[in-house]
Length: 235
Image 1 (tube, rainbow, N blue to C red):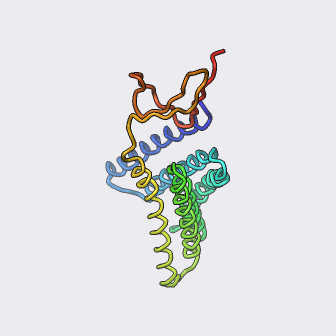
Image 2 (cartoon, rainbow, N blue to C red):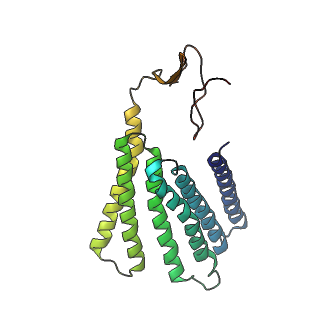
Image 3 (tube, rainbow, N blue to C red):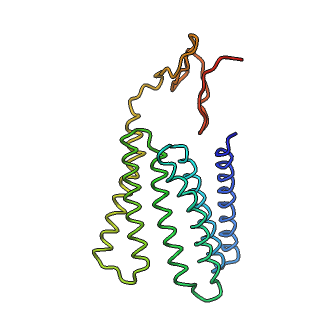
């Protein structure tokens, strides 16, 4: 099992543990009849763990994609920084009756920046055709610009109406481009012959065939994520 597959399994096990913990906190609040401030902080902490963990995993998954590996590394490195800033804002000022304004702004800024990275990485991971890769890249650029301006609005006490409208337009366009990637990906697959076969390699008259169905009555399990098929002579 590769290192990335082990990390993915660890993340999904952790995600399951986080969801269970969140459910237990919610059940505890229902049973005792009071949703305290601490309960809310715990739930936000668990949500931050899922958010940053997913971003880190998507960044690591992009590392093998050649020219965009730098983006994957940046997002994977930014995820723990975002988590630290969010946890700082949640828990450091628990006793002062409202928290620290600068800590809250830093936390929100990191969340917005990581959101742009998450949109870019997951969009590129979903894209399988060159045109869709460009569309995913456009979604990432739009999200990055929207996040940058949103961070500016976070630190500005009174952004103008035109500024807010520009933000809304950018986020809408980023979301449009992002969701079009999987939609167009599925659309491009419609009508593809389910049992279509494609020869990937040939060795001594033996063919390595890609197929969406059984080949000559033989069903073969699809490779797992991250695996590569290699045709070689038996030693």
